[in-house]
Amino acid sequence: MRSIFARGLFERQVAIVTGGGSGIGLACARELAYLGAKVALCGRRADKLEAAASTLAGDGVPGDDVLAAPCDIREPEQIAAFVGQVLGKFGRVDVLVNNAGGQFPSPASELTPKGWEAVVRNNLNGTFFMTREVARRAMLPARRGRIVNVTASVSRGFPGMAHTGAARAGVENLTRSLAVEWAALGIRINAVAPGSNIRSSGTSQYGDELLELARRATPLKRLATPEEVSRLIVFLASDQNDFITGAVYGVDGGQPLWGDIWSIPEPDGAPGAPPDVKG
Ligand SMILES: CCCCCCCCC/C=C/C(=O)SCCNC(=O)CCNC(=O)[C@H](O)C(C)(C)COP(=O)(O)OP(=O)(O)OC[C@H]1O[C@@H](n2cnc3c(N)ncnc32)[C@H](O)[C@@H]1OP(=O)(O)O
Ligand SMILES: NC(=O)C1=CN([C@@H]2O[C@H](COP(=O)(O)OP(=O)(O)OC[C@H]3O[C@@H](n4cnc5c(N)ncnc54)[C@H](OP(=O)(O)O)[C@@H]3O)[C@@H](O)[C@H]2O)C=CC1
Image 1: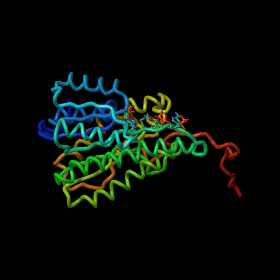
Image 2: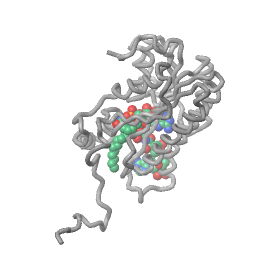
Image 3: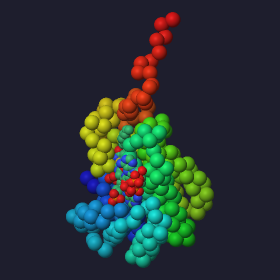
């Protein structure tokens, strides 16, 4: 089953999915296209985008309904050029899924200014500049639009990846601010926060061992698929969602509610054991 939603839900609509070349973004692009949207995908690597376009063609999506073009969301000029391409080809943007993102694990004390900035630009600045560009050039003039920001489950902090935790928390707060600023202008904006327990091209970079730790730390005791994240994004991106804005939803099997998500090494010199409290 490609979608739990009725075909035609996105008929005549145009959706941008950043990071649509793989994982959760590709699952969203496939589902949106299946439901009738014309889709525009971006990412940094052309080969991933070409493979994604072939996947969509294999799904039966007409080539004219797909635009896949490189764009590094850390670069505002590239964002402006990409949005220009989308408007040139399709003439409108109804849906924006800010899914592109990523980081690298590092103890906070080892993060260099360049490394910190790279990740904040990737996850916070890129999301804001893409949103601003699409809003100004398409959604605000049309007085309609649905934006979904894909963040990460950071409500308990993100030890071992403080840069991305801070950036994702920034996106969540941005989501609330824009929801109010643009409420009267026909735009709804929400965030979806996957746990570290989604089996995707993204988490495969961290290895099976970390995924197994995440599975065990998940009350539902399994990993999820990108499609299970996509269906919530797609609902929030649809016109059927009119009354939800400024919300952040976890798709995480209850993971933030219980136990260690993963272990990070004890810092040098830290006491290895809890204090003896016997009296
Ligand atoms: C703990 C438990 C975990 C547990 C982990 C479990 C988490 C699961 C939850 C999350 C899942 C996902 O997000 S899934 C998605 C995962 N996918 C990704 O993360 C891939 C995307 N990430 C990236 O592209 C990179 O991390 C990012 C930095 C953003 C962009 O990389 P680039 O190579 O373009 O970066 P550059 O601009 O060249 O590099 C800038 C600087 O960044 C730093 N830098 C870049 N890569 C680095 C690296 N691997 N290790 C150290 N430092 C690095 C260096 O200081 C670089 O400067 P120099 O030293 O001068 O070069
Ligand atoms: N899978 C999971 O469990 C979790 C995922 N997430 C988040 O969900 C989102 C999707 O992740 P997932 O599908 O798993 O992982 P992927 O790594 O498959 O997806 C990330 C996508 O973002 C693109 N991307 C990364 N940086 C940039 C950039 N600067 N400009 C444009 N595109 C970029 C990548 O393409 P390219 O390399 O070609 O640029 C890639 O297609 C990400 O934001 C991720 O951090 C959060 C928590 C958990």
